Image (cartoon, rainbow, N blue to C red; front, side, top):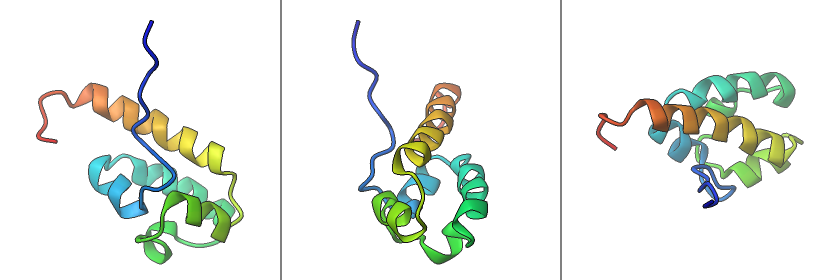
Length: 82
């Protein structure tokens, strides 16, 4: 059985992720509450690693939540242009 490839990596920027996987914006909005700031407004060009450090967020939780949405969107958009 092959290992599933992750879509989201810590070195990706918020902009990279939201532009590839639009539905992840909802995840960022949920994490805004924990961060105390609008991540898409204040950290659009920051990597996920930097965002987790800057706003004291658990990196693995953020990556996992983003990955679930990205994976779902990837599976549901086979006919879409990449």
